[in-house]
Image 1 (cartoon, rainbow, N blue to C red):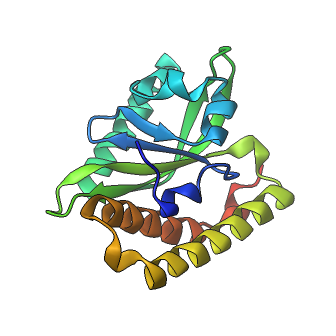
Image 2: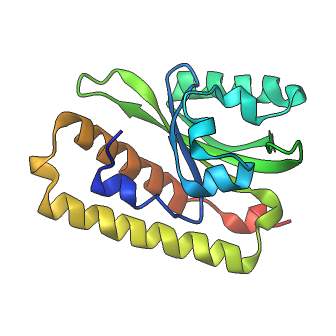
Length: 176
């Protein structure tokens, strides 16, 4: 899957990011997501999202999917995630929908924050990253958006919506 300039902002981002299709299969993820879970990216792609949560969290993940289907987004959803080595961590899931040029749901951009890492330093890193990413997306909009194909525009629009949601998070409420 080729990466647009917009998606390149996520490559080595401090946030855990994944893209899923409309049935919960992981289509892409960044290196932070793979590293946090202890997998190679190739071991993640094509796998269902339920493989990264313990069985006792499947209902929470399923409820998150239902909310996404009903509303087009998921905000501040606490879910336990499972690493490859079996360790777990408490995560906060945020997701926004992706649509094709005909406004059909094709998947989501999902960001997961490790709640155990919510320090002032980490929060500042996230906020700085969000601001820089929004600036990068604005540059893309000004310079090349009109030349993008429909898939690239859909990806751009989805990422723009995701970052807009992320900058509105009240991180002070999430500190451990």
